[in-house]
Length: 215
Length: 215
DNA sequence: TGTTTTTGGGACATCGATGTCCCATAATGA
DNA sequence: TCATTATGGGACATCGATGTCCCAAAAACA
Image 1 (cartoon, each protein chain N blue to C red):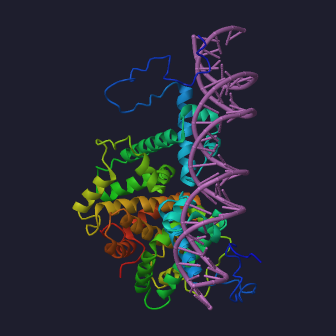
Image 2 (image 1 turned 90 degrees about the vertical axis):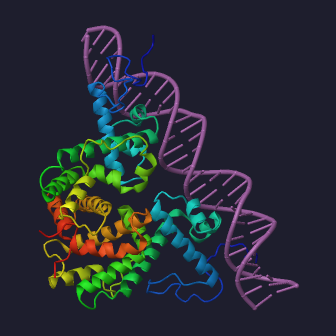
């Protein structure tokens, strides 16, 4: 059987028990170490490259991932697949980072500071996801925001209820601004306008106080 | 001379005294009424279309401008020309709107409110200019921000000096946030998340107070 | 009304990005 | 060490966007 030089088809060897399970969560098995690493490298590079230039070419992405273009195609047959996988992956990374902030615990103000810190840490993923509204709209298709993880929105609503966050504007607006401020901070650092270590505190300060001094 | 069906070459008729003058300011003469109108329509459509989808095709833009693709090419030989002209034009529109706010007059807080109002009014132009950092970096080339017009930055610095705007962060950061908040407001309206008439007040409120309540 | 200008659209050639296939080589692991 | 797997890169075909040219029709103008 000359099964050689076959695309990394569905893991012909080594058990993949999750193959057809009911729980569709995590269809991406870590695969074998090498493949998993390559795959992650590609996804990270894609998010990063696309965050900086949404018109990035597949060749650009492959180069950023230090991978041949054919290898990239081997993992993600076409651009749409790659984009979709990158969205899902970035979503997962961001979700994980947010989950680690445990925003459902402690006073909202403190929780929000942890959340912002977590978000700044995954700034490039956020920039990719959030930079182009279309990306999410068109490809979102397959991924639902794990309901068990407390969301930013839930924190915002809790904070509003406790009178810590502005109740005069909608929670959605606060969420939008949360992303926008974080994104702006990330981009400012990217452009050297803000030192990396100053991003978090500046973002938090702006979020809490705005840019004017109370009269 | 079959000078017919010639591209709108350099206005063969009607004097264009600005042709080779030293002051390169305003090389775009209003031209004849028709051409000027078509040109403006194309530029406006381009800014609008590109603001919503930076990958917009020339055909998309032509359609948005209700103009044939060949007409578009007649006015702007290639994509780069169009992009450049759109940037210059949008810059002028924004600059004009900002100038009308007379931000060098009155108390900074009031001036800033006028400025924000003016900026929201030209939201799509701002979204185009500001939506993609690359657009400005790569094509800026030819246009300098008229020094006679008071800039947003000058207002910010004045406000900081008077202790009205946060002096703890850089004026550049405040300016970035000013754009970011305005852009977010525009986009929120675009997505129906915020009513059109509520954008200005929400943006102002967020700018001044941030999103948390003072403890 | 007659002339000139401007437009819309079709027909093409070109160019870059994409996707596919194949093979030699490097990396992995038994 | 040897077999298997993963990779990189070349060669192609394809496709969509772009840019060019041309002509007939519509619009503007005198």
